[in-house]
Image 1 (tube, rainbow, N blue to C red):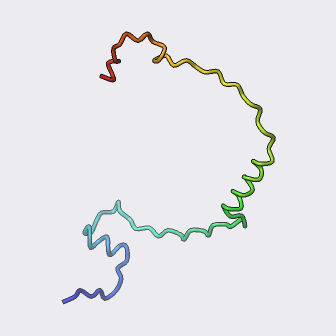
Image 2 (image 1 turned 120 degrees about the horizontal axis):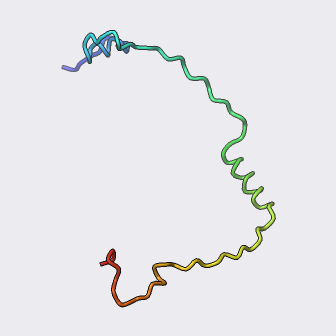
Image 3 (image 1 turned 90 degrees about the vertical axis):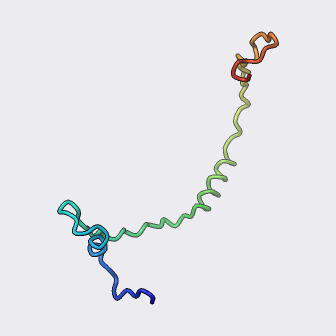
Amino acid sequence: MAFVRLRTLSEAEAYARCYGEGDENVRSVKLEPRRPRLFHGVSGEDLRVAFESRLQQREPAHDMVVEAVPDPVSDRASNGHKPAAAA
C-alpha cells in the first residue's frame, strides 16, 4: 500500500515530527522574500566586447628589457652527485 500525504506540513510541524517538542531556544522564523535584482541593460557579453575594444585602442607597450636572473640551483658546482631531495 502506498503512503498518501493528506496535506503539507508547516516548518514547525515538520520540526516537531523530526525532533520532538524541542525547547524554547529553537524558533521558526519567516523570512521576507528577496528583492528582485536590478538589470542595468548591459549583458556580460556587452562588457566583454567593450573591454576588448578598449584594449585594442591602447598604445602599444614599450618593449621592456628583463634581466635574466641566474638560477641559484643550476649555478652550483656540480660534483656528479644528485641533490638529496632528488635521490
